[in-house]
Amino acid sequence: MGGSIIEMVIVLVASALLLVQGIHEDLAHKRAALMATEGQNEAIINDALSKWVTDNYAAKLAEYTASGSTTLTPPSLSELFTQGYLKQAHRNGPFWGGIYAISMTMVPDTCMAAAGDCHVAYLMYPSLPLLKGGKSDVVGASQIAQAGGSQFGYSTQQNSATVVGLNGAWNTPNPLGNIPAAIVATNALNADGDSVYIRRDGSLTWTGSQNVNGVDLHNVGNIDATGTIAATTVAASDANVSGTSTTTNLVVSADAQLQGSATPGAACSVDRSVRTNSTTWGGLLECLGGQWWSVGLGNSSVSVGVACSIRGQGAWDINGLQYLCNGSTYRPITEFMGNSQVMFTMVAGDNNTGVSKPNCPNGTPVIELVPQTVGLDVGNPDSPFTSVRYYYSDQGSYWVPQITLIAPNGAVESGNNLGLQVLVKGECYYNN
Image 1 (cartoon, one colour):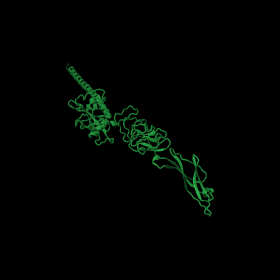
Image 2 (image 1 turned 90 degrees about the vertical axis):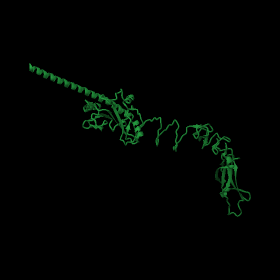
Image 3 (image 1 turned 135 degrees about the vertical axis):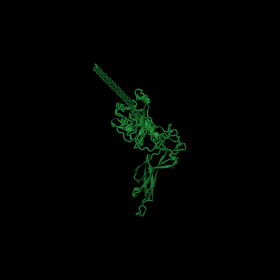
Image 4 (image 1 turned 180 degrees about the vertical axis):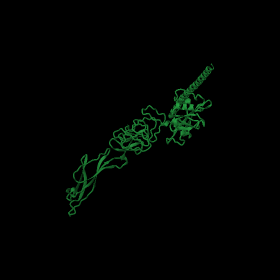
């Protein structure tokens, strides 16, 4: 009887031990599941924070450049949610207490925006270490880190001052100090928002200014800009400017064509603008004082007395007569010249050759003969002639220069007998 009681006691004790062990294992399993859930939750926050850095890299770079401090302002969890990086609102802190702290810096501390060597690094960590029974729970911290992924690490009892990433992939000073079971997530100190790729399918919209660091862009289709395109040299086979084109320096072109035209004397609005002359004689027009004025070639609308305002400006009428602006009206240029204008010169003999008269609008064609040679037959002691006549005959549209020798007996001979020549001047005479 006594032996049966002892055996029963042993069975009861063993059952109790097994029950206690089962309870411990169940609690450990539930705690491990709790650690995994916490790790997954922190991984979601870390992923949202990494995307925020990608989209706000330019703003963080500007903050660093303006302040000169490597310490940057991180977003809060509520900002990550309101800006769409977190799909649901998250409690700001783990189940054991404290908050999710975020520190953000620009590295290296000597980087320069112009050099393109600046990177954003951050640490996201619970502000309190994981405890179990009032003691550091390194095992639980490792479970949280493993559930979070390769960007997570934790501090151990042996090296509590340093947080080491999973499999020793990275390490960083413990932000909580010399405390085991600190859990830290990072984007790594050499990775940030400027390391993402531009999608080839065009679905990624740029949210900030781009710096291609002085390299070239080739095989570009069209460039549409709402602002300024600035370049030292712009080379184009065709340039179509629908608005105003302004240059403050020399414009060099093999050919230039003005398609806008105007009529001399018509009204204009932009002083010093240039157009082509739409009248018969063509040429250029310049806008001065609200009116188009001829520049260079003639103006077919000019005649005596037409109003002008630029003293000394030249113009032509439809007949080719040149005018000058004198005072306030156009006057024939002949008024400021001598009465005769030489139109051509030539040397002729007594060959019965006609010389065409010059065209003299508003004037009279005249001829002037200037002897070029005088001959004398010195071998004849009786003087074969007494005089030489240089004259012409008017044949209407032309003149015929003539040279004759007069003998003592009144006989007339051709000047060609002595090779005589005369300089013929065709002139236009104007009666001022």
